[in-house]
Image (cartoon, rainbow, N blue to C red):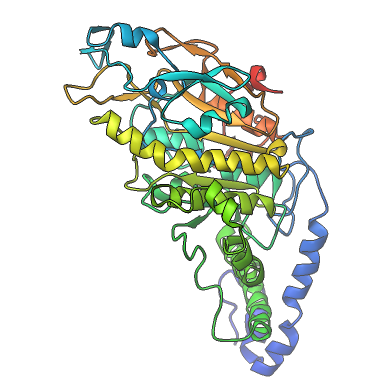
Length: 480
């Protein structure tokens, strides 16, 4: 007597058990063809992405935004460790005046002496925004920037600070900003990943910074660490026709397995990954190859200089990817360590090294996006997980972690340009004018993409989750 295995649809296991290999291939050959047709139909713009609406067959199909968007894609230039606001984009003459004097505020219960910036500030562009001499090339693009000088966050430690900046939560695992964006909007090129993270060195908290957590696994970022061979193992020992037949057969078997496991997105993501890898064999080598770029473009990004080559490649890859429809690109400046901007000592040497590595590539990226007509609808974000104290840490001429008032800047994608928003006090301790919390930043990023941060939700563990949790306000003052 035949007994159906637990969880198996009646009759399926019995028929599969008696089926010959030839019959199996004949009957399952069109399985993925039907899925491909359904995916194409699903790519017609649908309703805004919310968990209450049934997901399309293709989880990364293009979806309608909640309202008209000014940005279509995002490039996040993340500087791990925490760049110092008072040494980069927030000049404080009072620090120079009172250098070495006791700080008017205690830090962790300690009295510390104020530390003047080793660098001079100068006004640039038609806007007259002041930029440190650390960033001479970015200073030339200052009229494209909106500098937020009043950022605040909740966690003064690197792990929690990085998670909060990337996921909206500093402790538990939550979906990353890039995952939420691709969940809400899908991607414009199904032959490439919708969300790509690029970092040549180790990243604190690892994949949690670009992961999908409880969102369907298809929205996790594709991580690239080897800039000379970004995507490996795309080609195999068999022909594409042979691979297609294998995938069709495998697809039918996977569909049988998935029939009673609708709540587990991992198998769906694995199937989608196989299909994406198949399509990427043609699209990805061209997208990730820099060989076709001109010598002038390579020079603009600093690829001809050893100290700027690495981050220059990251920025040029970001331009190539968004140009081809990738929705979200996350760049980590991790050359030389997982938090290179963390200057507890040797502030001058550390920040000069980091700025030299990133300044020219960032300016090149902004210029290149603008000359190609991409900056208008590409949102570029620069910053770290927090800033640095205005006071000296010990006697080492360094600065400690500082979450109470720091600087980030945005460009393109519907942002007002050539302006500074918010302010810290005369020393750079606290945000005293128009403070912008990380939740507010996230709400604003989603708004620029046409997504209401209160409506972009996903039901998990019995409640609706969102990137901003129960917080966040769109910063209207920086919207064009």
